[in-house]
Length: 464
View 1 (cartoon, rainbow, N blue to C red):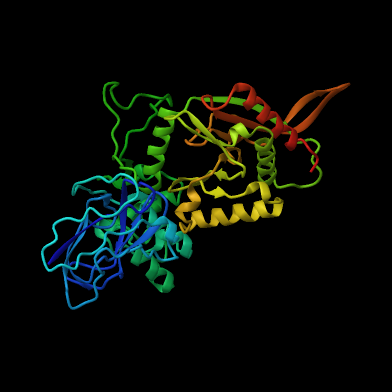
View 2: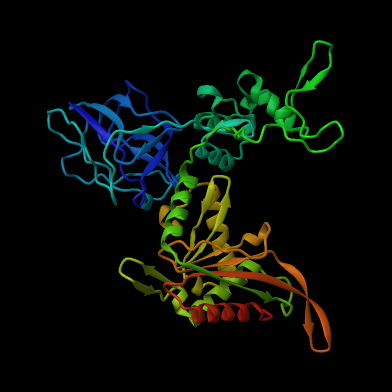
């Protein structure tokens, strides 16, 4: 009486997920609906419950491994004396609130109650499902001398734990979820300084070098004469001029790193957008010279976008390239790009057209906090009608932001600057905000885009 449990779709057609932490090991007995494994998808970390009660015969992979949707996740020996789900009963994954909201889950495969061996269970999924038992093995990513999967880093940030001081118990010096949780519960388990961690002293050497603002590649070793010499050749000659360190035909080398989770999904989304959208970008500057007092720039940007969407509804829309049809939206749901170490998130600020400045700021703060803690529901990462990229908070004046279907437009805000402008009778220095508007030219005309941009600029120019 064996049961093969295939990874169900944990989101909206997601092709794979990464193992974060198993809650059982082979040989353990697990009961129906108890947490089996935590998986990181492109949108959240979710708990996958057991579809049966019984003994765990096999687990497919370890922390950091990528499992393709529809392939083997675990195998069980069913115990008929323990509770089992009735045939055909809806399972409905019960994901814990600490990771993701229930909307992030798709129904799990129903457990069979027959006393005959069960070969395969294709499961109930949303969207297409790949068939097969391929498991792609990946190692945890090493950043700053610390090896850990993105979900573990997110958990460390959420719990306020310095991951560089966590004792690693995983294979090859990998920091696991349990390591972080133990360190959060008992501060005495933390290493006294980053120089104390790492297998074989490798992590310690790295941190010792970086703490002195030196690259780890510039570590020195004692020479026979007691002198310390560089292990790598200098890029400068003895005269101080740059010189080639390798023949021109030698290819650059490095450690390949397979993308996971959010970055993996971002790569797919960007490639899909590049293949499907016909993008055109208009740029201009919003003059903020008339502003009175200190104001929330992002809140003003969102208010201006709402005004522009009401003025030119064609850009607050979705476009279907297959049927050549568009959907104009009465509400304005703005997708706000949030940059993180794990990749790009775009949570939706719902009903922005009904929010005042305070409501907008509170909504943005809530979304950012949920993104940083990886607790944001998957439903909040889709369904927006237009998007905003405030890249200027880092650098850059103008850009060509990527329009992600089915949306037809994205607004990019550049770095705030002070420009000399001509006025009647002379010149003045005005504070201005560079604006870039990229739109899908299949769904919008150039005139519609220009009128949208003008409405946005006019609203931003108002005193308050």
